Length: 448
Image (cartoon, rainbow, N blue to C red; front, side, top):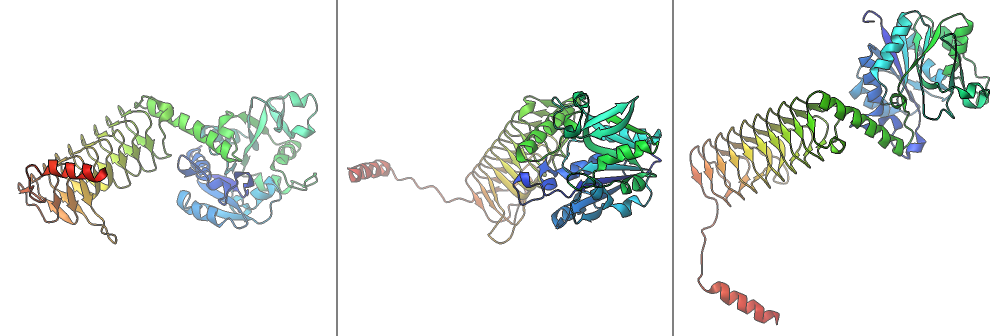
């Protein structure tokens, strides 16, 4: 298989009107990644070395997105929507390059699994000219039936055209197909449009190939893996299926999810072994959690890395650029953005650390704020190793707090604090005996 070349043609020209959206259907996301990108990934995992993306007229957004998720994809435009065979032939130039295998896929089937695609390619390698991927839905009504004779596929019959006997068939067409590159163009060019809609149907190549004496077979995929998405409700269902798969994989790989159904993963989340994830945790795009780390309940992480045996939350937020090193801690109701928390450092509750470095072993008291923004620009705060920042302190950047320095609670620090120094940045307390009672009585009288 590794010696066979493969072109994946992804059909993404549909308008997706049932999504009720100004965005192309295939760009709606599952786990933070466009549906069409999930399809491209599956094709790559199945060994496809080239991708042809077929978009509709005005598909600029899809073309632009392709540059990010499949930078080497060749983009073709299906100017008129005249059926699936017509759409595949929009990529004629790519097909003509002579790949061994052609995978025909749909941009709105994000749950397709690489194993099914690899099996279809294996059947081509064994001599089949066309391999159709089928499935067995709970209720086959409305689906095209796969008509087989002696283990070979002879036709795909649309539900409305089925005989009573054919309607009993539970094996249905998923739409996905693998075609031998040696026969692809010849078969596609023979597809006609003599049907009620006047369209060129890809499914017709099954009978064309069979009549030509070529081998056509069907393989079975799971019902979930070939689900097409047509509206927001189906998108949510697909998201739930994807999340269920990913949660199970995380646990199989050695992570503990206390309430897995409450944990949200993104497509690129990396979770190490012996990681503990408590309920209601959200992992956005770009998160890496190293072995032995703990993420407490109700935490929200995005674009962040968490080192070995570090501890996050509960109710913590890690924003893009947060780097939490080994055994460091970010406590409850804390936010970290574009900052490094070095080994063993502690950022305790109700604290904001942004555009900063917190040195190894440093302690950041509750309610501390790095004042990193002046309304125009961002500035950096550097806190040295072993420093102690007292509760309710404001560190006005740019500023350096030296290693081993102490900042007294309630301070507003605007100047550099040398290492091992003690800094106070607050007004001296003044106490007026008896004035509290006098003030209370005056206010009580005024209220009457």
